[in-house]
Figure: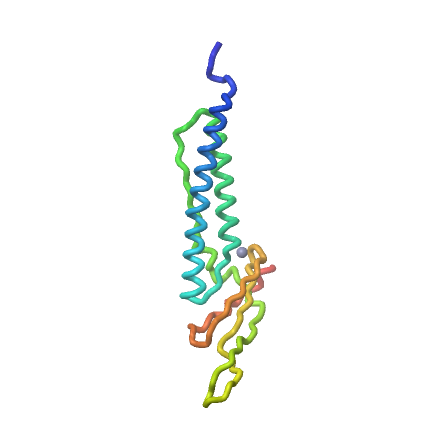
Length: 157
Ligand SMILES: [Zn+2]
């Protein structure tokens, strides 16, 4: 009787799962960190929208695909394969994926000539990601670089 196709023991199953979970958590953690870094850079330095939701979804889908592949290869007893984890995180800052839905003034009280005066200091920009529908609101001060309102040529078409 061959041992080759015997069912996995509980210990083996556990190990197998542990390996999968470890990979997943590790990849997820590193990806979320990377997304947070890029989001900060895009929003606070370039003053442009970034779709975190799309980025996280892309990572999750990719991880799911890799897990399926790992399971398939494991069933085939083929352990010679490479995991190719590549997500283009910068693509979620592409101006083409955002539609500007509106902007509202940001007002602050300032002392002007010793008088407390309400002045507009910037704008709240409300974007919508046309890929996932997420709303992205960001405040832009007047002293920031003027944002490009990202004209979209009929994205719903
Ligand atoms: Zn999105």
